[in-house]
Image: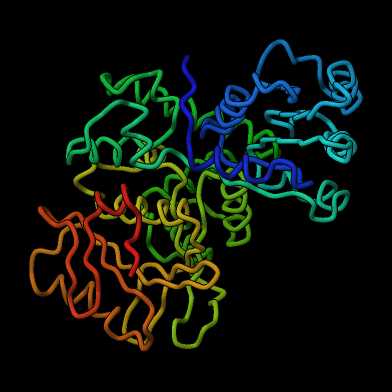
Length: 404
């Protein structure tokens, strides 16, 4: 199958080559980390001074590489002194004590190491201690809307946008195709079950599997809503499931580690501090979220739009928090070095009461940082209202935020 270049990640990976850091591609299973590696090989394998060593733990040919000694022996027989050796290890966490091997090889002259992993703790503990911060993490997200158009060769239209919001952005859907609704959901079900089994149940030896499944379904139905572990435990008790707030926090942590969801804290805009209780949860992939949610798209379109905006902000490199004001809430406070923007997410702004609800909190913020309302309002592209930019969802997902 043809490997399409995801230019955003290709540029990031290439920019770190030769700078003395282990490059770690992290993200959920089936999000496309392996193809970023394969694309690197495709773009660089013909360079005469480059020697590429590629270990793919999901392939049968590499099943016997189980320990760091196995890994060292494999690399040793393929390492070429005098060339620029680039060692790529896909799903490195499947190899016992891979950290020690990686640390030895990346310190060799003119050698780069790129690894992938499907668990956020892959680079914690021993590896972090061994290399004392000499690694960079590159988070691989599902396809953006623009990448979705390219991967599926689709025109930019309201219909295509709805397909994206429904099925999400897992790259594997390109091979499955989008013609059969049944096959798409079967594929997404398979991916979800693999993540739950391999990255959560087996990794953490989970025994209370019914609650594990019920809690993730709850997070699908409450996407973008403020929740707390205590309130969830009380709700579960009303559903005849007696669990503690600590168990809720533990399992939510497991979902986060597997990159199924992100937990987003609240931030006091005027007080400039983070609240320690009540967070919002957003999903890494819209399709997996919709798979576990009850009802149809018409019943939860606003949640999906808010989740899509959150994910694209993360793709653009923003750190995102939920904004809190004395007289309301701002959906997203987005920061990166030297830049802050405020964003409200909405479905359709069709009357004055909706306009006041969405624009009002932004108007009450007492600073000059850029402010946006992003919505799927028909025929909207970009409009300025009292210093607040009203931006169409499609335009945002294709072009990001305009420079102001």
